[in-house]
Length: 80
Image 1 (cartoon, rainbow, N blue to C red):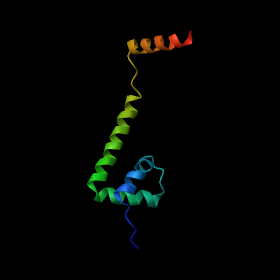
Image 2 (image 1 turned 90 degrees about the vertical axis):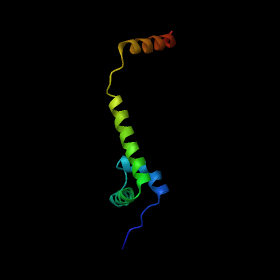
Image 3 (image 1 turned 135 degrees about the vertical axis):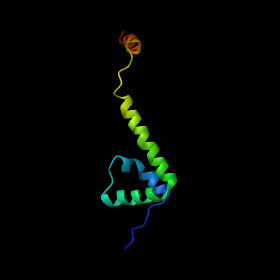
Image 4 (image 1 turned 180 degrees about the vertical axis):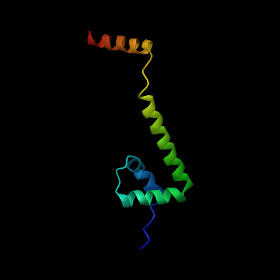
């Protein structure tokens, strides 16, 4: 039996679950099969993967001292 390939709409709807590895094996295989055939969905998935990687990498960079002091000053204003 040949599994039904999901539509573009279904792939986009489940893309974040796919990228988070929250789908079962069959569902992930269906999406991977679709991505291998659909350039638009593949491009969207690649964009989301790269965006996630950049956001993750940005979270490891320490804020400049001047910015940290400005934020601390703003927070201190609310503690008064």
